[in-house]
Amino acid sequence: MTTSTSQVPLYDLHSHSTASDGTLSPTALVHHASAQGVDVLALTDHDTTDGIDEARTAAAEAGVALVPGVEISVTWRGVTVHIVGLNVDIDNARLQAGLAGLREFRAWRGEEMARRLAKAGIPGALEGAQAFSQGEILSRTHFARFLVAAGHASDMRKVFGKFLTHNRPGYVSGEWAALESAVSWIRAAGGQAVIAHPARYRLSATRLRALIEAFIASGGEALEVVSGSHSAGDVHGMAQYARRFGLLASQGSDYHGPEQSWLELGRLPALPSGCTPVWARWSGVRRASA
Ligand code: AMP
Ligand code: MN
Ligand code: MN
Ligand code: MN
Image (tube, rainbow, N blue to C red; front, side, top):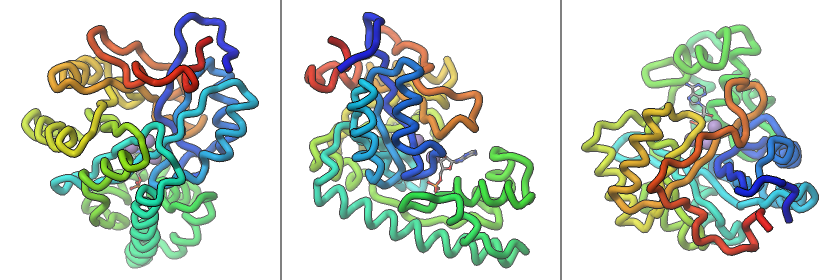
């Protein structure tokens, strides 16, 4: 199962493909993971598991252990929070019904974003964004790529601040899944629920504690302590939350493709000591190590 020569398998449990807003196909993503020395890769596309079958086939050929995953969009107390599901059964009807509802909202939101951008003097944004979307979801990332390509912003970071965030012309607020629902779909599908990149929400300590408590009460199990979007201080802080609340710790790059040159698959700091890895009780079948 493994091509790794290192003693400790390398886990990257958060990544995206063209099935959502990544730029590598599931096959190319898996090959890139293999080249980067990743032994265990979770494909966690936004609100879809459409890339999993292709990734599984590629992983079997490349000697990478593929963890079927998903990153579910949630609205909790008005904040958008992402919940990763790991080792989900992608044939589970409850999970798929939940994800289908989120994709419907995405489709409507995309049309509304385009209407608002048209009013702001940018016509054709829906078709423009769709041209960058190869999968079954439409993401703000696809609008961002269109807006940059059409010259409305100079890069992917600036375009969000200019058009795609609160109080900007292309921003549409709305309700994603309830936290309890997202966790229950993941559990129904036999998976483990993980709060993705917890430091990115910039919640106060009180609100982060409330989020974690609600997550645990719903059956959530893990916190993404190590994330490509976490600073060293964030990692340290989130490790403390994981330990204090008895949550397992996950690690993932949140890789979206080679365009984000500062972020690489598998290039992650180690989980701080005292953290129990989310993979601690995974069966040998899913482990890439011999
Ligand atoms: P959506 O789920 O469609 O609202 O889109 C959210 C996605 O946009 C995230 O998964 C990121 O990939 C991307 N994104 C959000 N904010 C930013 C930002 N400030 N800069 C670059 N990408 C962003
Ligand atoms: Mn994304
Ligand atoms: Mn996310
Ligand atoms: Mn992600």
